[in-house]
Length: 101
Image (tube, rainbow, N blue to C red):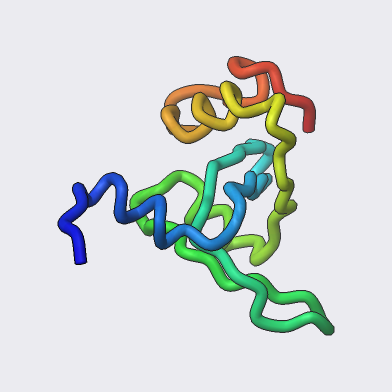
């Protein structure tokens, strides 16, 4: 056994890709980064995920019960980081970061 910093442990536990769930509620499109998700059913397709109640996307997901989940290409890594570092409450991520909806 070997002691590791928590920041390294999280990387070892992460089984899946970072994905980008996009929501739209009351005319406001938003996108977030997410890495805590898993398939729970194939027909119909169901994905379990963890979204904080404090996050801006939570209300849209709760109200509409739908989102589009995108698996970003490696070329979008810098934009994926920006998506995760800003809140949709504060900025229009699609416009500011240069994403298309």
